[in-house]
Image 1 (cartoon, rainbow, N blue to C red):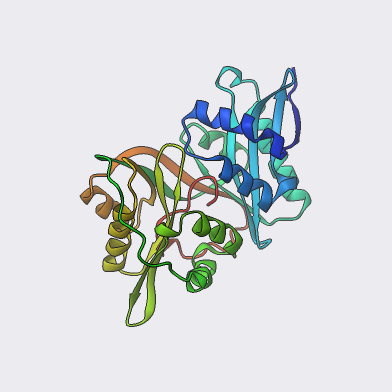
Image 2 (cartoon, rainbow, N blue to C red):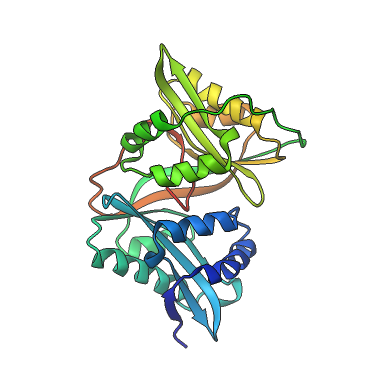
Length: 279
């Protein structure tokens, strides 16, 4: 049987939530809505016997590159080509629109599949997890103006994603953190309240003190007993600071790209990414 692949609609969000719950992922319905708002024509589902059996999403950032995420297949239907079919559909969609580069964050299981489809390694990531006694979280005393963050992020990420970051900041303003040195921006971070854990990211810093200030700020603001961070493995500060705070290794991820990576941004300044689903 060949799965039927079609565009995803808001009516499919509940099915997407069931698939991500089966995988133990952290996304919320609001995240699915963000995918559809960002690129409604570039998100797809695969149907098997009339039921949604898999998903894939794409977001195009400023026509510089696109992000492929949420590659999910029902556990009982894996190994039947559904995931590969969805990936090919996403790649064909982006190629038809002449997007010069596609990026994604691969698990060790998915990495060989992506390599066969022409993806190359950019750098390595690690999911780190903190489990702690539940706390109330610190009260929100200030709301940061994120305009300076959005301006800096375009250069650091490699493209404008301000609409997405504004959505995340509006949903969790308590997690917006800014570090300054001599009046200049030396670091910033946002965060999300996922279905299983609070998630720190993006976490960007030019100095170790800025990286530390932002991490400690987030941990004070978060009241959840589980916190996720997708840290850049070679970052000079992020991994050590997370280890110091008690974060433990959860899984490896590999950032990969297909096409011309003409806008890599400044990964040397990124302690942690926004997330594998968004980049």
